[in-house]
Structures are given as C-alpha cells and as structure tokens.
Amino acid sequence: MAHNFIGALLAMGAVIGLPLAVLLYRRRRRDEALVRQMPDALDMIVRALRVGQSVDNALREAGRSIPAPLGTEIQTIYEEMSLGIPFTAALQNFEARFARLADVKLMTTAFIIQRETGGNLTRVLSNLSDLIRDRDTLKRQVRAMTAEGRSSAVILGVLPLAVGAFFWMIRPVYVQTLFNHPIGRKMLLVAILLETAGFVVMKLMTRIDT
Image (cartoon, rainbow, N blue to C red; front, side):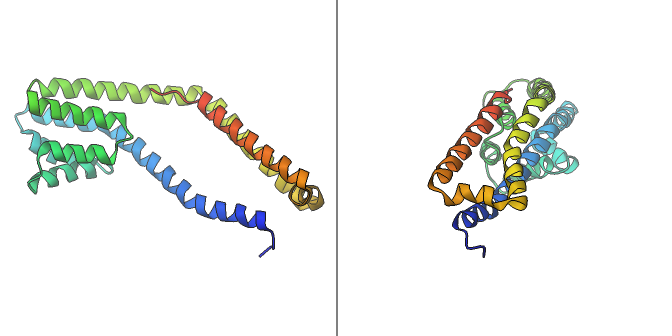
C-alpha cells in the first residue's frame, strides 16, 4: 500500500509474529499456573492415599477438585486409564504434553518408579510437593532480583524503534536515507543485528535456571 518493499517486509513480519508471540505468552502463563497448582494437587493426593484410597481414586478426586489447567490434565490421565491405557502410558502422555517443564517430569517419574518398584508413595509425593514449592519460590525471588535488568533490556530494545518512528513522523527525510542510500541500508542492517545481539545478551544475563 505504501509502495515500500522494506516496510512491507516489516509489516508482514509483525503480522506473522504477533499470533505466535500471543500463543507463546499464553502457553507460558498456562505452564506457570500448572506448576503453581502442582504442590496443592500432590498434597491432596497424599491426603487421599493416607485415608486408604487407591491411586486411581486419588487422581480422580484431585482432577475434580483442582481447577484448570492441572485439574483438566489429571482428569485426562484418569479418563485414559478408564479407557484401558496403562497407568505408566497415561503419565507419559501427560509428560509429553509438558516436556518443557522439569516439575512435571519429576511428578511423573515419582509415580512411575513407585508403580514399578514399590515404596512409600505418600512420603515421596510429600517431599516432591515441598521441592516444587521451594523451586517456585526461588524462581519468584530470581525474577524479583532480575527485574531491573529485564526492564533495561526491554527499554533498550524498544527505544531505537520509538526514536525511529518519532523522526519518521516529524522529519521523514532523516529516516528515508537509511532505506534509500546503499550505505544507509548497510548501517540499518548492522544496527538491527547489533540491537538483536544486545537484546539477546541482556536476556541471557538476567536468566537463571533454577
């Protein structure tokens, strides 16, 4: 519409990237909610086991009581078992849907090992609940401690775009030189690469795996 090839590419990239960014954001929020629910769900399963219920019934009660997203996933495990899928396979399906979450792997591994080798499941799940709760607390502390660095990364990443848009509105000829002149295009490409590299480096500096 603007007869600008580079502008069209940028617009196309934004249109393509926006839905993906929204999906990744929603997936991250869902993962965080599921991990926060895991200690309470494990505690509920432990209480059910201590009063004499079976693992299957404990999972059914937890699935009914825990809200989504974890409650839905536990209900899916129970329904798969009701359809004849082995308990281990149902847990592995759950783990495959959240393979990126270490806490889910810990939970499924604890159930599978207990089912295959035996042992005190209530004690294992109770310790696992405390471990997941401590990990979540540590992650929150890390996010609070690195908030300034993450904010700086966002500001430094957005500032050049904001300044470029500002000059485009008040004095377009300044910005058009970067698109029309061969040296300007090279400078723009170098600036984009450096900006991207700096943003990635700052994100890596403020990321701590717990």
